[in-house]
Image (tube, rainbow, N blue to C red; front, side):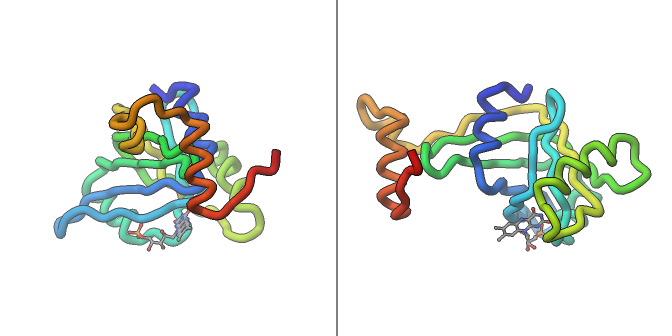
Length: 152
Ligand SMILES: Cc1cc2nc3c(=O)[nH]c(=O)nc-3n(C[C@H](O)[C@H](O)[C@H](O)COP(=O)(O)O)c2cc1C
């Protein structure tokens, strides 16, 4: 389910956005501490996400999306989430990965474990509607927009 390409874009994306559902409607919030895990999972640190916790408890269906803002491509991943904590099978292994990413800044006491069932690619419209668009050109354009220079 999680192809090498999806993993690559997840690694290159600074943030993911976790969409959940409540009785009042949809909710979405950014998460910086996230990683692909195993063949079909995304794990996300719960540091300050009370609404996501509440929503997932009543409806496990989620959508996680991320884009590499420079190449302007990414993925939408749909699946079911559970909140994991110390004592749950597989928690320690997942927690160690996210804690390493968080460093000393935050303690990852609980995490969202998302089993991905469907993946849709996200492309900036230019890829679809402009002729002969190359990823390198998109990167250059985004770097100009954000005012950043490549280290290479
Ligand atoms: C750049 C950025 C990165 C964030 N990363 C995380 C994260 O990895 N985990 C987390 O729980 N909250 C993270 N947050 C905070 C949540 O997005 C924020 O507390 C949000 O209000 C939680 O909403 P929710 O309860 O609806 O999920 C981040 C916020 C920002 C702006």
